[in-house]
Length: 559
Image 1 (cartoon, one colour):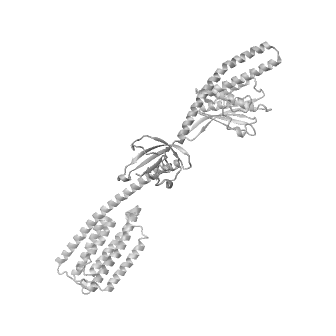
Image 2 (cartoon, helix red, strand yellow):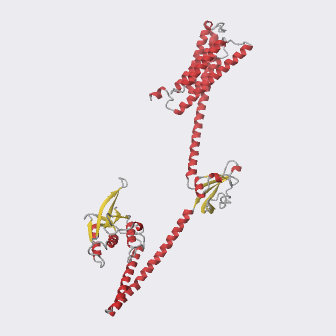
Image 3 (cartoon, one colour):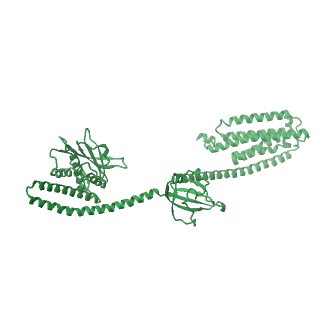
């Protein structure tokens, strides 16, 4: 802040640079202007002496001192920081040099009196109105002192044969008044010009900055937009080609520039009406020979010169959209097939029940016939298996809309284990442990979560079928994830077994419908589990259990 108070321009790098350049121009013009004036005056004086000039060796000393002082100033200007003070100092010294020059060349009769305009004008352009008025005052005072020295007869003591023309004080006042008014008039006019120039430069700088900003924004939009943009001239030749158009077509800008648009892209036709805002469809060839569908529109570019009128094309690759449309159609087709399959499966249950009932009656009538008994058992077993498959298929084909409520997860797990224990194929030697806190409540559909437990535990029981000491562990806990803003709570339910495990190669397939590794399996159990878990907004995953076995982990979010 202290530096800014002592040097007003120190806080503005742009102003510092501008003032530094002006000081450099001042040094250049000082040497050039004074050298030319003195050189021309000496040259003219040698042919026809008409003005008073000091001896040539004095002029040589003056010019040598001027050059030396200018060189030193040019070296110092690279090291200083306060250019405004340095500018004041330089122009003040210029005013003193002009006064010395005027005094040495005749004082009031000197032809170099107009050189006082030089520091006044430079003060206006470097330091604006304050500088111009300040150096006008300084020039007037120095010129007045010069006139007083000449009027008092002291000039001849310094310069021999001094051509004094001030015979009276009235003439002194006359010279002082005329030149002082001229100095102030030049100061006012130059300050007005410098102020206007400063304002014009500021407006020009702002306009250039706005133009650069708009140009940069246009370039960023033109390059980064994901819509292809192609502009053509009145002869339909390509003039610009953005990055999105390069990605869509496979051509680079250099390969397309100057070509007629119809040559690389024969599918793009100019609409008859340029104000037609409809989106058109076309198939265009890419650089690699592939033909892709695009949507495009064309608009006229109105230039001031009618000969420069062109058009702009905006195009978008529709390949992904077409693929998505095909996928939607395929999904709709599969949904229709699924509905038909569900209806067929439902209709199969009635004749299947009739077949099963008829076989049971025949079984009673045949008695102990071992051959027929074995055949009837096969029919009944396969009928039950087919009925279970149809049941699970119907369950899988139905949309899952859980009716959520709070329930005790431990009580639901006990109920599911009791149901499994009553199954004829259940292994009584299998150990099931529950590590679920009694007060842990879960948010979901109890019947659907019960189905998840039944399928997962049955799957683990099958994995432990050949184990001497099969063991299944059900554990659950409540966890929270995320930070304060995205805090989320969930119930983590894990079913752990020590069975033979699941090979790495088929882990990604076990949740797919109808994928099974058992001869009597339907392949729908785990698919139904994943469907139910996802309907609750949860996730299911599988990982290894050390030293052997698997862990199914189910995450159920809490409200």
